[in-house]
Structures are given as structure tokens and as C-alpha cells.
Length: 337
Ligand SMILES: C[S@@+](CC[C@H](N)C(=O)[O-])C[C@H]1O[C@@H](n2cnc3c(N)ncnc32)[C@H](O)[C@@H]1O
Image (cartoon, rainbow, N blue to C red; front, side, top):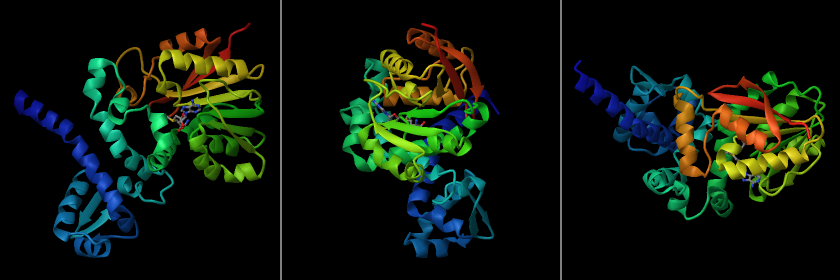
């Protein structure tokens, strides 16, 4: 193959990626994935029971097969392992991630990437006229998509109790803890702990639902709060999972200062983020860094950049551990004084 052919093939692969992604999301929304999760079916059966056009569905299925979401044998379609993970009841909840990433809310924000790079404005604000969290407060349907998608994308957190020993802790507060999925994971692994979820008021209904069993048994409490203003005192472990990357250095520093001020003596701050390496640029971290540029005033940061922020807030990095999907845990301890 000539160099030109190689370049052409590679560019077409890159530029058609969004078409494949859209097709997967369409199959989820049309009910194709949930139907096939019940068992293999041919196109005519699927089309009839879902009320779809068989000829068009067949073309969609051919693409799903090419991207390894569906396997077609003797005219019957079934889900591959990847496809099975998109089922409504699959524990990964990856379906929620697909629906969020394919949402008009995200697509419109990404459509303003160029203006963001040109002018420094946040693409989300160019597209939607306000910042993402104010927008979510005013759009309950998108807020539901966001909170479910975040919880699905946060499944890496299940590894947290394996890399951090909560034995000596009493109260763990998850600041900006979303629907509470990570807090629930931590409470399950450490039955002696009490959990506090701090979130914006509009994010609380999803958290009340996810944490209902822990709230009823008195193992968790939920507090409406704004970590840009203050953090409630009383916890000896704070979790900041995918929070600091949403904010500019000034705001991230403010969140860390408030955390440091509220932390019980001997406490620790657990930061879960995709940390950019100083050398090289792994794909996922770079993708999410540009996603942060599109969505927020924040960024993915290197370990060195986190340490600078931490020191300015009276904290320092104690250790760093790998989670999964290029996520890392950065354990921060208060500096003396
Ligand atoms: C990217 S999500 C991460 C959610 C969760 N920690 C996770 O890892 O799945 C950021 C979270 O910060 C919350 N948040 C944003 N601004 C906040 C504020 N000022 N005070 C408290 N929470 C806030 C959002 O509601 C959202 O749930």
C-alpha cells in the first residue's frame, strides 16, 4: 500500500468514527440491543416487533456487525460481548454512557470547539448560552442523562477500595459525588464507615434514589452544598472524583482549600482523575482533556500540575495509584501548619 493510500485509510477511519458511534446509539435507542439481549433474531422478526423498516434495519445491523456490536450467522443476529454490555439491565450501565455521549447537549457543545480554541470561550457556553451545571439545573431531562452517564463512566471507582485502605477512617465525604455510586461502593467495602454526599441541590434526587438503602439504615447522609463556597466539616476522608478537572486553576484551588479547611485532623483527600503524563499523550486522557475544554473551564492535568495546586491549598501528594481506563488515584495529605 502506498503512503497516500495509508493516509487515506487512516483519515477515513478517524473521520467516520462518529458515524459508527451514532449508529451504536441509534441501535440502543431503537430497542435493537435490548431485543437481541433476549435472544438471536433475524431482521424481519426484529423489524416487526420494533416497528422498524426491515431494509434499513438490515443496513444498520451490517454496520453494527462490522464494529463488533452484533454478530450475524445464517441471517440471525446476536449480540457480541460489547453489544451485550449495552443492554438496559447490564451492571456496567454503559448504555447510559452511550446515551449521554450521543446527546444533542454534548454534540452541540462539540460543534463549537473551533470557536473555543480561537477565542478561549468554553464551547458549551457558546452553544448553550450558559455553563454546564447551570444548564443542567434548568434542563431536568439532560440532567438525568448526565447523572446516569456520569455514574456509568465512574465505574472505574469500583477499584478504589482495592487501592486505598479505609480501615482507619470514620467519615468519608464525596464532594460532587454525583448519584452516589462511588460512595456506595466505598460503604460496601468498609462497613464501619459513615458516608456523606455533597452535591448541588438539583443533583440530589438521583443521589437519594441511589443511596436510599444507606440513608434508611443511617449509614449515609446527603447535604446540598457548593464546594466553591465551602465544604461541610466532620469527615476525615474527602473524595474528589472527576471534580477538579471541571474547573480552572483558581476554582480548583478554592475547592482544595475548602476541603483542607474542613478536613478532620489526620485526614486525607482522594483525587480521582485521568492524570496526563508529563511525556507522551495516551489517547483517553487527551480525549477527555479536549472534552473538558469543550464542556468546562477545566482541564486534565499532569501530576506535577496537581502537586502545584495542592501545595497552594496547603496539601501535598502522598502517593499515586492506578485505577482503570487511565484513571489514577492521587492521595493528598495536609501540609503541617
Ligand atoms: C464530572 S461530575 C463527577 C461526578 C462523580 N464525582 C463521578 O466521578 O462520577 C462533577 C460533579 O460535580 C458536581 N458539582 C458541580 N458544581 C458543584 C458545586 N459547586 N458544588 C458541589 N457539587 C458540584 C456536579 O453536579 C457533578 O455531579
